[in-house]
Image (cartoon, rainbow, N blue to C red; front, side, top):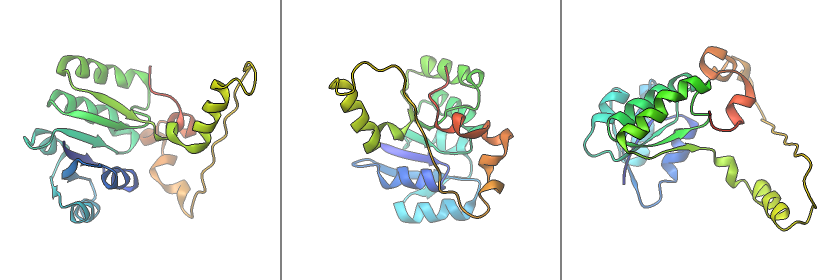
Length: 178
């Protein structure tokens, strides 16, 4: 498949590095320097807007890796343009934002998947193995803890802006919108 990537930051670049036998043919980002850097690393072209990327006839599927406030709207546009979508978590800030995405997927017949990559974390896979083997007996509850190393200035990044992120780790790391 030919892949387009909207959002060329950390997660978009990670997805681009792991497309396997597929190839990245187009990228788009609000930061032109970041888009150009990912395009250079992948051999892709830079598109000026997500809409232009979604309209490209040589793009079969798109990865949408933007701030949370843009995820649902861009996914809806991509699906209605006939593109399969890998949508980064959480998919939307609020469940009601995801309603139009589900409708667009049904209308277009395209596949949409949410990128909850933590499902494949070695610790979670081992936990699942222990539970499935009955090694812990019947479960009464599960407690999960998640940490982030942070960095200087992290509190000033988009994740700390509720209008962009939806607010907090429960949104960012939680399950898909209902």
